[in-house]
Image (cartoon, rainbow, N blue to C red; front, side):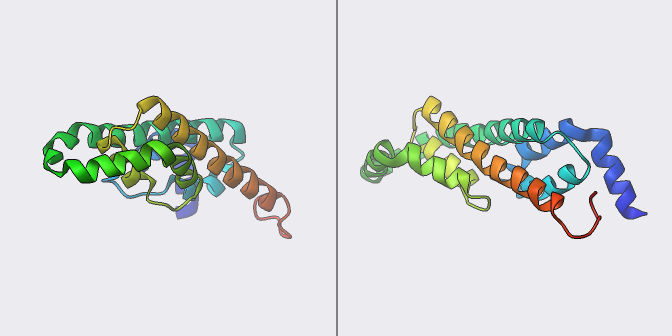
Length: 159
C-alpha cells in the first residue's frame, strides 16, 4: 500500500521531480542523494537517457549555485591572502581534473568542494565543464549499471 503510493508520486512528478531533487540535493546546505532514486526510476521504466540528462543538469545547476555562494562570500576572507594564493595556485594546476574526479565518485563532498572553488574564484566555465562531465559519467555508470543489474536479476521483481 505505502509502496504503491510512493510509486504513484514518482510517476506523477516524473522527470520534473527528479530534476528538482537532483538540484536541491546538490546544494551544500541541504543533504540528499538523488542517486538513490535511480533504481526506482529504472524499475518504473523511465527513459534512461532522459534520466542521465536530467540528473546531470540538476546536479550541475545545484553545484553552480554552490560555486556562486563561495564566489560571493570570498571577500570576507581577504585577510588570508597568502593561504588563498597558495590554494589558487594549486587549483589552477589541478582544479579541472580534480573536480572531474570528485564529481565522478557517487558519495563525495562535491557540494562543499564547489563552494571552495567558488571561493577561490576558479574559472566558472572550467568549473561547469568539469562538474557536468564528472556528473554525466557518474550517472551514466549508475543508470546503465542498475539497468543491467535489473535485467539480469534471477527473479521477476522488476520485470
